[in-house]
Every structure is written in C-alpha cells, then in structure tokens.
Length: 439
Image 1 (cartoon, one colour):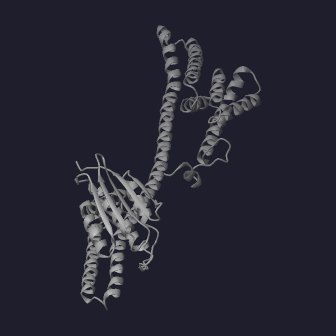
Image 2: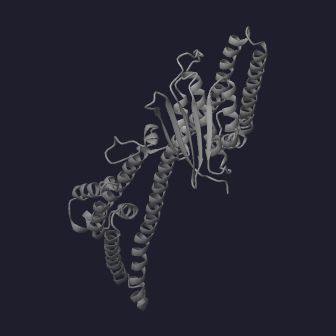
Image 3: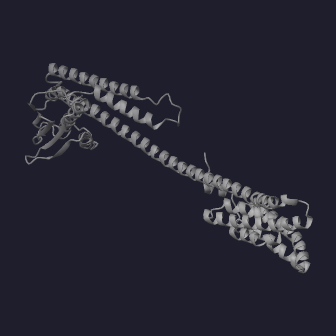
C-alpha cells in the first residue's frame, strides 16, 4: 500500500525544521557544495587580486562571500546564477555557475527566466574565454593564421560545455521530480478513493445483510403466524366440542395435523431456498466479496418468489378459515391471469396476514375477501365486520409486525397499501399491486 504524505512525514522521510531544506542530506549537500565553492572562489580571488592590484585579503574575502552564495541555491536559484554571471569576468565561481544552472533548470522557475539567464551565462563565459584566449594567442604568436578560427571555436566550446550539460540535466531531473510528485499524489488520491470504496462496500454489505434478515423474518412470520393461528383456533374448538361431538373433534384434530404438516413443509422449503441461495459458504471467512452477498440475497429472493404461494391458492386460505369457524365470503372480479412470482406471492401474503389478524383480533366476525384483476394491476381487500362478542378469544399473541410487513411488501413492488378501521366497527386492509408479468 502506498504511504500518504502524512505517513511519510511521520516516518521521518521529510524534515521541515531546517529552513528551506526538506531533508538532512539536502542540507549537508548544500553546505558541502557551498564550502567547496567558497574555497574555489577564494583561491581564484587571490589570482584576481594579483591581476587587478587589489589587496589579497580583499580578493579572498570577496571569493568567500561569492562562493558561499551557493548555500541558498534551493531557495533563490536566480540569485545564485546572477552572482555566478557577475563573477564571470573575475574568472571565478565555475562550480557555482554549473550547480546554479542545474538548480535553476530543475526548479519551478518559469522557463523564460531560465532561458534568459542561461543565455547570459553562455554569453558571459564566451566573452571572457574569447578575451583570455586572444591575449594568449597574441602573446604566444605560435598559432599563425589558424588563430582566427581557433579562438572563437574554443570559446564557443567552453561556453556551451559549461552551460548546456547542467541545463539539460536540470531539466531532466525537474521533469522527473514533477512526474514522481504527480504519481505520488495520484497514488494518495487512489488510496483515499479505495478507502472510501471499501467503507461504502462495507455499508452496502451490511445493508444487504439487514435486508436479507428482514426478508427472512417477514417470510417466517407469514408462514408461521397464519398456520399456527389456525392451529390454535382449531385446538380451542377441539377442546370445546370434544365432550359433545367426538366426530367433529376428530375432524378438527385432523385439520390441526394437516396445518402443522403444511407449516413444517413451508418452513423446510424456505430453509432449502436459503441454503441453495448461499453462494458465500465457499469463500474464506472475512474475505467474502460484496458481489457474493448481493448475488446470494438476489438468488434467495428469486428462489423464494418462484417456490412461494400463488394467487390462485387464496381459495384454499378462505376454505381453511371457514373450517376454523370463520364466516368468509370471497368475490373475484376479472379473469385470473398469471403475474410475476413476486406479485402473486405478495398478494397471497397480504390476504393471508389479513385473515390471520381477523383470527387474532376479531374472532367470530364476518369477513369479506375481494380480488380484482384489472388491466394494469391486481387489487385485493380484506374487510371484517365487528367482532362477535360471544365468541371466545383465542388468546393469540401479537407482535405488531403484521401490518408493517404487509406495507413493506406492497411498497417494495411499487404498489399502494391502506389499512384502518371502518365506520361499522370492523377493520379493512386494501392493497393494489402493479401488473408485472414475466417476459
């Protein structure tokens, strides 16, 4: 993993306590170069003082001051190059000129300034070299006619040799440095983006797990609540009629057994769907990809919808409620047609949960179940009248999640859900689902 700028600074790779130097080795290098440059300029200052008649200590002091300017080359590279150009007539500061041009080219100084100062340094070196060689040729008088081309050619080579290499090398190092900084910034940016993506992936995985748990809890509630409610109602009826009508008690006991077996069958099918939809079991612990979570949840939901109940089984629901002693009337409008599995399952569960609520909270109430197959939707309504005061309460517990689960199912498919008491003292549950036919 790429270290960020803060990590590199915390690790001691950069230091910001030495004026303008970022690293200790940079400060040590500049101090060493400035020392060599000051020594060079001091020695050349002795020669310069002897040629101009100035006091030797003055020439040495001038050389030391001029050469030590190289110490600030990283902070003020333009000043270093200007000082080297100014000392060119005194034939001192060769190291300062070379290092100054390299630093100027490698820095972020505008290229126009770099070109102008490099040209000034080249011209100054050419003039000084030309004058010195001309004097040597004139005094030696050993070159003959060839001195006419020898002096300018050597002067050109000297000036270009002292200016071009540091300039080109500095441009290369500066471009490489900027490229490395750009790549480092890009790596830091990618690391931050990957961290954000990892956080979002974890959030989506947690959301997928929560949704799957909610869906499983809703299915378990729908499967168990209705069957168990009917079993409790039949058990109460069995207890009441056993001493009086043994034959009816036998029929009720058989119904209780059938409903228990149906509940177990539905639970077994649901568990089988969950096992078959779990594609994450083969992945190592702690390294399950988010795509596997999404595929597992989607597969489980699809299989549950395919294997779930259908809308034409509503008649069986109504028949079971009638057998439990409830007065239920079923009316169907329109022609029954196939819908998408999730639409049919949701419609079935709404009617099932509404009938379960009637068993729990309105024992003995007359109930009407209405289904309407329309052009672009299917509608269902379960309404019960006021509870029969003489009917015994089955004593079924209620978690208060039935209506919430129905609403979530219907709204999840883009439908409409309305529930509430009626003016006659009963309760009504209405839902409309869009017609999502399979392709």
